[in-house]
Each structure stands twice: as C-alpha cells, then as structure tokens.
Image (cartoon, rainbow, N blue to C red; front, side, top):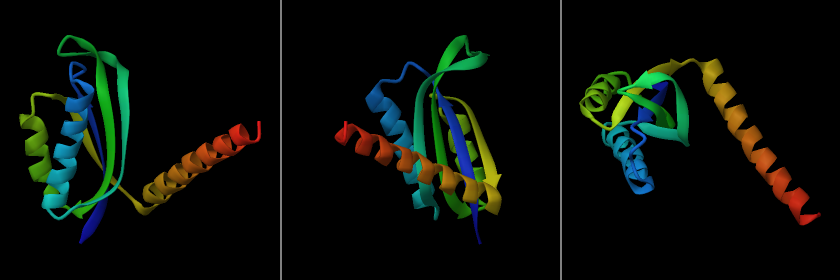
Length: 123
C-alpha cells in the first residue's frame, strides 16, 4: 500500500549550490531505492528561520512530495537524523485533499508561467 507524503527539510545554509543539489539527489535516490515514487520536488532555497537553529538564522529549504510504503519513513528518518547537513526535517502524510490541492497549485504555477511567457512574447 502506497501512501502520499510530503517531506520538508531545512539544510544548513553553508552548502554550496552543488552540495545543495547533491543532498536533494541523495534523498530522492534513497526514496526511489526503497520503493518510493517521487511526485514533485521544490527547492525553496535560502530562507530566514523563525528562530535560530544551531546558531544559524537562515537555512536551505527543500520540499519533496512522494508516494511510498509506510515502513520507508522510519528508515528515511534515521538517515535524516544522522545527516549533519540537515538542521530540521518533517514528514507529513497527505490525505487525498492535500494531494489534490498540491496538484492544482502546481498546475496553477505552470499556468501562470505560461501566461507570463505569452505576455512577454506579445509585449
């Protein structure tokens, strides 16, 4: 049985762009190797934190939506907890309404991007 999940990770802000991308790939690969399917990923980049974590006031945010058997999350949590580059993480199980909302939101983002391109071409 595959469930829908969303993983939000805050990586340490000292990562280079290449390291940030490598960390994302590491967890995408981990999920896929353990029977999960990636639905969507969205690197948010550097953002301010609400409160300092490990004396840092910013972090590199990354959101990943995936489908996986429920036993995968325990192994994923162990990996995230062991990783010194991860300051915080949160796995959320998505119900069908959240999955539907995320899909609509992504479609809306894509539609807005297409509209902007169209407007720019006709300007």
